[in-house]
Length: 125
Length: 97
Image 1 (cartoon, each protein chain N blue to C red):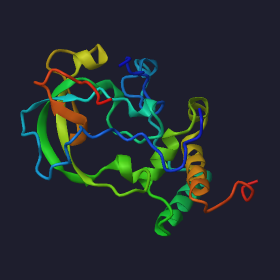
Image 2 (tube, chains in turn orange, purple; image 1 turned 90 degrees about the vertical axis):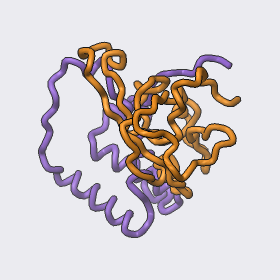
Image 3 (cartoon, rainbow over the protein chains, first blue to last red; image 1 turned 135 degrees about the vertical axis):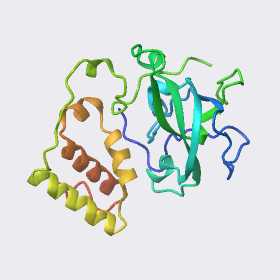
Image 4 (cartoon, rainbow over the protein chains, first blue to last red; image 1 turned 30 degrees about the vertical axis):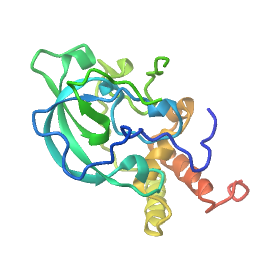
């Protein structure tokens, strides 16, 4: 592993052309897909979205408020506030165990979520 | 575009096979003398605005996997604090020899 170059890191990319909105983008009950993004494979970063949720579909429980983005705080750079959500996922497909009706509740930042109804998880090149 | 490498980061252990069906570690012991000293160092550096907990975690997460798994909890903290202070130029590699 090469040491991190100074001042560089692999933050999760914002969806192109979409500045972080102040009001929650997703209402309770909205079906959302966690972005299938792997910034930890691009360089130094600090990601709070568990690997086992990337690309998975869940339902928003509620917005928890806005918090400075830890992906920026971890590099002591300006950290814009992002909406954090409780998102509920069915457990059995995540861990290949558990019974139908078992759920996993996870805190996920808005910039990791996209509407589940859009078909694509393509990354901007 | 090629498929992304989906290997989780070392610290991102949720759902990892090797921890399934193993007993939960009930490690509720208070920190030992070494751990308390490392935490005191972390608190002092935070008070002096030289580092934050988010940076501490980022430094821990950047430890190469073989070292990460070999180090104890507070050894990881100390390794990260060292990396951060070198990165910020608070100490030099020579001073740490």
